[in-house]
Each structure stands twice: as structure tokens, then as C-alpha cells.
Picture 1 (cartoon, helix red, strand yellow):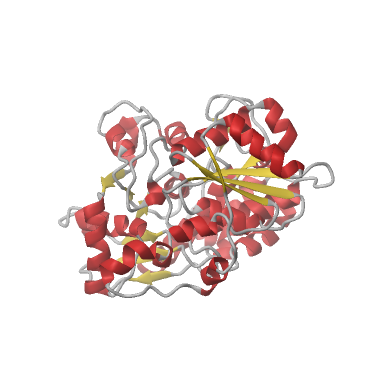
Picture 2: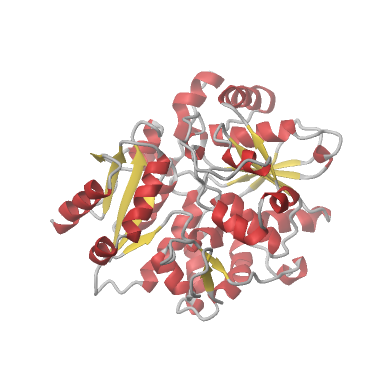
Length: 436
């Protein structure tokens, strides 16, 4: 299989797409054609690992990693991804729990997969590979954890100062000597722009051998398709119904993986994107011109994105707003509703959710009860509530227990360097730290 740029560049192999992250023309890599499946193709696959191997085999055709796919999958899915039933609701409702990885967020899946691939591909004897990652909260911690102290790799984490939770900030800056944590005086969009500018700078790229671990890298999206395949197949086998999904959405990577899975023939019904007050996707589908915006700070900080990168992939795959409206729906949830949902989930259902997951439960309640709620729905829980204790605990009046893996990370000393959102400042920090 080959991978092409969303901006029309030449096709490359999976290995090149993984190593370079972003296409030379500034576009994002996407498979030149998606494989097509039917549920019966997975009849002998019961575990998420077995489903992942079958689903991902076509994407690895022609790759040096083809024979190592089983090992990569085993390394990626070394923790549970349960689909739990939610009680107290009139209709069938489940939750896909994506927060059981090392850093208690869904990003652990994509980051672990990418680390497993890149560490097998890159020739560390030459020069270290520098993974450049902009984060709105969870991605950077997951990537740093996945690559921490791996030989031949370095990680540069760019995160917006003051716009992530205290525990997220700690997770972004508590790693070994191969991880450089940079607190950027700006928004997530500034961090993302800075990362793209660095990767597009020939001299800087030559010095540091950049690759990306944001969802601009196709290696983040491929394993995320797997858990949508797994959850939908489980439900379809049990009920004969195609479940619909509600996905909290910021940079559109997780949602795009769900859409990819449906386009490949997995038994998925409707797809609803739950957005916070950064409503650029909702406005685009309503007819507004696609214009990047300044991101708005919200309680669901990891979704504070004013220019979602993966919209470029989505438009390439499904078309413009008229076509997108036929394929998905967007529901906007403001901070007041997020707070109300956190309280309501706890008091009515005994469910403790993070602010991002609260946008999914809020979106479900806003669906038309006469039609949409009659379907079977799976809500996507993207992070553990303990990462946002300063928001959640005052609302529910209780302490949120910290998962053991997260507690271990929080016990590590943390340190970050503050920089302006400027390419010269970033280059200086990289040259100074990694030349030492």
C-alpha cells in the first residue's frame, strides 16, 4: 500500500510516511485506497490484538515492518480497552474506556504503536530520531512515556503554558534525558504551528531528523481504527445492530479514525462529534467558510483547538461540507453544560468522568429522543477523571482515586523550559539541549 499527501504529492511507503510524519508539500499522508472488510472477515478474531492484526495487515503491505506487525500489536495493546454498559439510561448505551494505558488517556494507544514502529525503523547508529510533538494536554505525555529512554530517539514536547491541568503539565515534563519539555507562551495552535514550521525548515530538520507523533502522523491513526473495529464488532456479534459512536473531538484524529473504520466496512452506524466551545467544525458543517481561529480556553482543555489538522484528511476522504453533513453530526457543549454533566453523571449514574468525556454524555442527551436515541450508542471516554481533579472533585464532592500507573508518573520530578512561540527560540533550545 502507498500513502499520498492530501495536497497531491508523490506516493510513499508506510515506512517513509511514519518516519517523516508530514509530507514534503506540507500535506498529511493518507492511504491511497482503504481496504474493505465485512464483519465475517473477523469471525476468528476475538481479541483486540487479533482484530488489529487483520485490520492493519493491508496497511503494512510492502513495509519493512510487515513481519513484525504481531509484535507491534502486542506491544501496543498491552492494557485492557473495555466496553462497559452504562446503567440508568432508557436505551442501550455503552462506554468505550480508552483511559487504561500508562498515562490514563486514549493517546497511549497511538503513541505506543508509533514508538513500536519508529524504534524498529530508524537506524539509530546514524543519528537520533527527534520526535516533535505539539500537545493540548494528553498527547505529549503519552508520547513522552512511549519513547522515554528508548535508545536512538529524542522527544520534544511543546505545550501551551497555563492551558493544561497541573497533572497534565507534570506528565509532560517528568521524563529522562531524551525528552525535552517546552512550555510555550501561547495556545495549542501556536504549538502546532511551531512544530509544523520546524519540520518544514530544511536546515533544522537536517540537524535533528524530525518526525511527528501528533495525529498528523498516520501511525497515530491506524491503531486507533482498531478499537472502533473491536467495539463495533463486539456489539454487532451480540445484537446484530451497528452501534453509533459519540467521539469527543479536538484535533479530529480520534474521530477520523472512527470514520476510517466505518469507511472500511466495520459495522458502525452514525458518528457524532462532541465539540467544546471551539466550534469551528460545527460552523463549517453549517455553511461557514473554513478559517482557522484562535482557540478558546475551556474546561475540556485537550479539545481547545482552533485549527484541527485532520480536517484536511477528512475533506480529502469524504468531501466538503455538503458531503460531510451526510456522514456525521457535530454537537457543541459549553463549559456550563460540561460542569452539569460531570455532576449529573456522578449523582444519577455513579459515573465519574473527565471534562472531555462529559462532552460525549452531554451530546448524547441532546440527541433527538424520538429517533436517534432508539439506536445503540457507544460513548468514547478519552481520559481518566483523575487527570482533571481540580475540575472534577469540587463538582462531585469526592476525591477521584488516581490509577497506579498515573500515580507512578506523578511521583517523578518534573522540569520544563519556557519559550516564546517563535521558531528561532525553538531552534535555540533544541541546539543547546541536544548538543550538550
